[in-house]
Image (cartoon, rainbow, N blue to C red; front, side):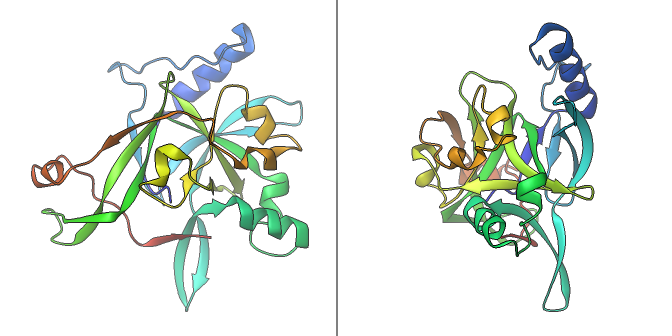
Amino acid sequence: MCHHMMTPSFAQVSAAMNARSTTGRATVPPDSAGSLAPLELFPGGQAPILVPTPDGSLTPVTMTWGFETQHGGRKRLVFNTRLETALEHARSGRGMWANTIVGGRCLVPVGSFFESDDRRTVKDPKTGRARRLEHRFTLSGHRIFLLAAVAENGRFSVVTTAPNRSVAGIHNRMSLVLGPGESSVWLGPDFASLADRSGIALNVEAETEADVESGCGTETDSGSASA
């Protein structure tokens, strides 16, 4: 499940949407430091997402990653949405995602996202706790790309699906990565057709135990969930 991403800034996403309206191509400019994805995001953090407007355009809005729910009398964040579960909720008209998958589909611009390796753990020297090693994923040929998501009341959740070949050996789920031209499909009536991500080519960079020991690894947030 996706629990860690790098996202462009709100200003960069806004500039990309302005470029799209004038040139037809959404070009994300670097910030003053020359970076395209400066923001490290974990569940509970805020990020710019793209939501459709009534006239069919897209507008950037800052939202919080994760829906607040109650479980066993305690609050938790649900920050991933299984596409299969959401479709079943839509069919039945009942469940957490029944409304959001129908009327709340949106897009999350990212420079990369991370998945934890279910098979490998390491002791984090910063916390003294064991955690899974991470793998960083990017979309081949794209410095910024889009993830499918759902949003409601100022909060969003990243949609997940069955893993493709790039992810299957690492995790049993993957973020629903959108390729060129697929954002309109996700926002349209045939969005369920995007469940199969076998045609998406992802680059992967594996975190190593040496990275963690040297302090170059990334501490992950384990206090959240997916549904």
